Image (tube, rainbow, N blue to C red):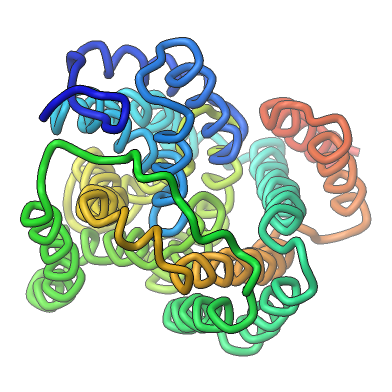
Length: 402
């Protein structure tokens, strides 16, 4: 494929990609929205691996598809820079630091049985509440800028509070897309035709078929194998059905591992809170859950299985869709559907903020005060989530000792 200003083609080394994303994986605090800023500054501004137009188009694809948007964006950039090995290098480099930190947290859980340890873990639940509340506020400003999209988000929130479960979440996202087609008439429909990849539509179609084959086949395999196959099915389904990535995966994972009895609610929310304190993708939380899930295998194997199958569907979709992007991007109805999906995601996240997060994290007036300060640190002073973790854990321990 020719190198020109209207395409992105593999022209770097996988090691170069790995080192760049390892740096990002060690320093990218603040969640998926912040990750996108880090990516743009490092890879568009400093390294100039792709243009602003190419970056924005790839970002639009990742935001529309289910899966972890920031990791999908990194995967796509690695694919563009150094081919398939570059895509793998980007994933490993960006994800490895957070996985190692979370697995270290698993090993510490048995030492946290005392009153101070339990209070610290409860503080991490309050962190989860503050961070998700901050995400709801930030996403609503960006994704619900008018009355119609606010209405979509409100209806989705109300629906999910009455009718929970994974399929209700999927249905409201689909309904949001349909509502967007009819209500979001002002969405832009023009996209500069400047994004292409070094493989064709046949390869893209094969990857999309593989995505759906695994979505259908893994549940059948899990019927005969309740161990690793069941674990792979649970995390692949969560990764395949979550729109919005990041915090929005919380209710899907909660349904997959807590409702099934694999992981207790306390350990689930404690790990989710701990994930806020570390850099890198929030989906790395899957490795923590996989290490705890009793599926008859070593903890490290459960962690790897959960991690790979959590990310796999999003990566298959991005790689599969890229060759078809230009045709879709010019379609006015597709752009309006994207707007409706984004509004529905805000509603889904707002429902998750109440249940299971608020109901588990806020137990009294002291927790309300701790959460209010934590939310102020994020919303008003825009401080690092690491400082919010330190505040919540310390304050919760002090309250327990008084």
